[in-house]
Structure formats: C-alpha cells, structure tokens
Length: 99
Image (cartoon, rainbow, N blue to C red; front, top):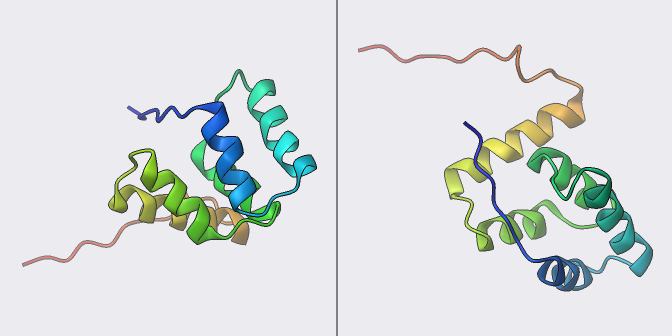
C-alpha cells in the first residue's frame, strides 16, 4: 500500500520560495493541491516543481526532509525520468541476478 507523507502548507510555500519560484508558480502548485483534495501523486509533484523551475535536487531534498527514505527517492526519480521519456513504467521489467 502506498504511504502518505503530509506536510504543512506554510512549510511548502516557504520551500517553494526558497527554490526561487514566483508567486504565480507558488499559487499554481497550491491550486493543483486544492483541485485534488490536497493530495498529489509524488511523481506528478516532482514533475510540476521541475516544470516551474525547481531542480530535481531541490525537490528530492524537500521530500527527504518530510521523511521519504533515500531508496524511495531513487525510485521516484526513476519514475519521473520514465514519465518524462514517455515510457510507461508499468511495462518496465526487472532483472534478477541468480546465484
């Protein structure tokens, strides 16, 4: 089951300002959260931040600060890359090293 990571609206606004996002971009992010009942898929969240000018490092650091583990961050980053490349990550197979 997917895990949720809550964070304070004021905290998010402060971070987005630190990332250098404009007030208009900040409001765009808040509006997206409001439209989706204050929830957003983490991949969509990272893609949105990058689209608005934040770096992947900034987004990852924020997610780490709210408690997302490094291994999960790597998975999120991969999924963001797949989505950007137009690859359906559900079709990506795994490789297994035996013995």
